[in-house]
Amino acid sequence: MRTPLLTAALVALPAAAAAHGINGHVHVTGWAIESLPPGPLADLFADPEVKDAALIGAAFPDSGYAIDDGYGELAHWEPFVEAHVQYVAELCGPDFATLECRKHVAFLMGGAAHGLQDELFDSLFLFQLMEHDGQGQEAADPGTDAFLFTDGHLRFKPPLYAPFEHLPAVFERAHGHAVTPRTIENGLQRVKFLVIDNFSALAPGFDEEYRPLLPWGSQHYLDPAVPGSLASEVGPTAAYMQALWDRLHGRHALPAVVTWTYPDGGRRLRSVRSGTVDGWVTVVFGVGARVGSLNGDTVRLLDPQGAPIDVRVQHTRWGGSPDDSTRLVRLIPQVDLAHDTVYTVEIGAGVQLMDGRVTVETWSTPVRTPCADPMAAGCVDPEPDPFPPPPPPDAAAPDAAVTDAALADAALADAAPSDAAADAGPPDRGRIDLPTPDASMFDAAPVAPRDAAPAPDAAPPVASSDDDGCAAAPGGGAAAWGLLALPLLALRRRRRRGIPTP
Image 1 (cartoon, rainbow, N blue to C red):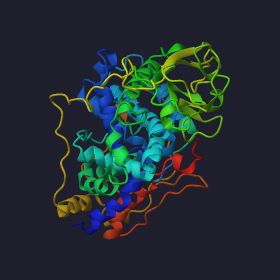
Image 2 (image 1 turned 90 degrees about the vertical axis):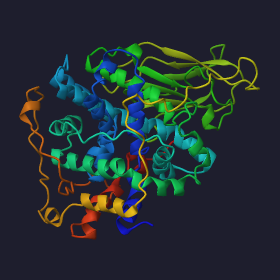
Image 3 (image 1 turned 180 degrees about the vertical axis):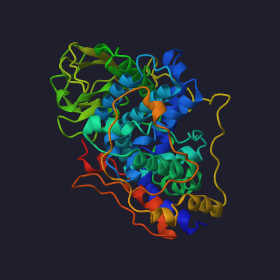
Image 4 (image 1 turned 90 degrees about the horizontal axis):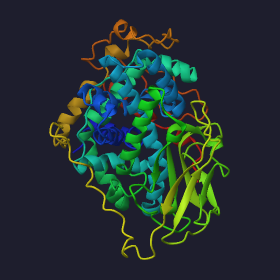
């Protein structure tokens, strides 16, 4: 039986889990790290503290919605990522020698990975769910996180960490957005406590609600052959992290802009029919590209004779303006394709990247369509490896269900801000003095102890006429719990306010 505090959390979480569930972000990022080939990037993550910094970084972008501050939306996109890359390179490069610098690099990569994963999930998998289950984001976000729990796959619970004293300077540099370290820390603490640390109290109820609504989705959310599924994001995430590592070192060459394509892994396109998601071809980039530069002139699908196929060129699902950034482009055929035929995808010169560069060469890759009889000799796609992969020997055991709802409520109550904290007055909402990147700043900016829940920090909401966030009001008792839970209702990403395409 659900008691009042647990019920309040369950009411808050459908929105709180919004954004390709947060546990999904943490775990796709962790699986991507564990899949890296031997080399400097894998060596970076061999330190458990550094790996944990990437995992909590993967939860970071959504923390802005938990505290109702615009930094959350900004952190999802490549303009912020590029500013963060430049900041960390100036601060810690070229050797990134200290542990704090390496953790900062990992946190950057985790946050950037979150944004890429959202673009993949929203632009591809959500359309699969609409096509197969007639459901969308409201079911997919909490549902897939709950499936991960119920199916025994949740094992990453990173400790609280962020380069809190540095992030405000990055937001100022990228967008002129003022935010305090305290606001960021409180937002991240709220997400970590409710969505990561105590999700076992909430997941069974979500699973019971959403699994019946997503019969196809619950069977395919970890299917590596379905573009946009959580499993299919692991390879692009690892490739994006490598691209970020190269960008930090100033060696990300233009020919390496494309990092992934769907179909992938030697697979064929899933369908020859137009009008179905399975007929789409998707190209993924290791750096943001300007939406307006990816068009019919720079993006083409060619038949075996080199003649162009009629395709609609689409980008990230929520990028509607030509000046928006995108980390992917979708080629959506407007005619049926031929079976068992090799087509060619071309990305031509003239694509404008968010770091200021413009591509000067044509990139291409072959795409093969399925056979009329998919079981015919030579027509069967390679069998994917079991997923998720076996955890390392020292990995934590999968999360276990909370069987006593009263114990779960006690844990939730412990994290509610105290009356004294709620009455302490509003946080400092003024602009802070922005530091200039300097490696000595790591020693000059001690982090306050975090052995108690922070006071509520109701930061200013996003300055937007179409903002749909919720603000919490101060108070005691149940209202104090509301200060923790209700801001999570503000976990709405840009995609909820934009005009979806196609």
